Length: 211
Length: 91
Image (cartoon, rainbow over all chains, first blue to last red; front, side, top):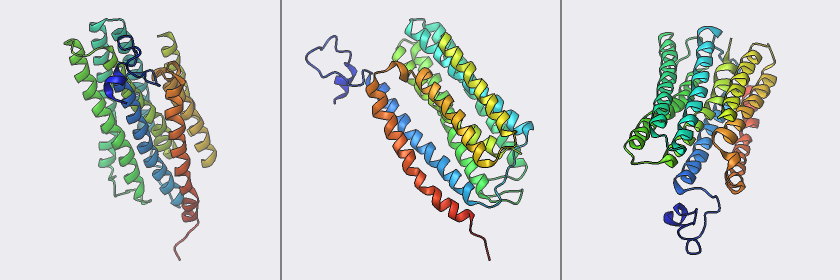
């Protein structure tokens, strides 16, 4: 179906002329859903690969002590969950036409996303300092631990970074009146997906490797 | 907004439960199963409420989610080989 037809799915102006969307949503939102499905399969694949290596290894390493690694992970999780809530507040404000409130909450969301990335990088640099790398295990276990840990968390961190940039750009364009609430909602979908992926990364990569 | 706040509080409680389970000295397969159940509960709530899938037309849900579940089921074909590797030892 052509984009124009999908965009006009509400059909009020073109009723009887253009086909209605069977999904009842605008084209950008449908495209975001399709991207999310593809990305979910990507994260699923690397988490399955991690599981494969872990099940296949005899002496898998469990390097994470409660303090500071697991505690850091808990704080990161709460920060990301809270950023989902602030993003929802921005979406609701945008739908009610409160542009300034929407932009403010998007700014808070971006700040929380940046805080998550900073906490993540702090964990990474602590591990680098201890001798960890994608190909090195200072504890003597399989080197695949570093490869899977940095691979999975690195891909997620890349998504967080892209999300923070996207939120800031969309907020700026909403403030200038060049984008509407629909764009905020679509951006929010992506951000919630990033949060959703972390809901699997934290227990599978951190808690399953806790000492 | 009230529903969103409740989902947020519920998600944080589930994270707390996950951390408690991680230190409950469970066998690895039991811990994995328990953590996955809690993670799917969290993800389900996020999908339905945060991502508004509950409020969209059912066609959207049925077009997206079963296909993704099918992909994940196909990936499960790897496990027998991983279990075979774990039973191998160097001579």
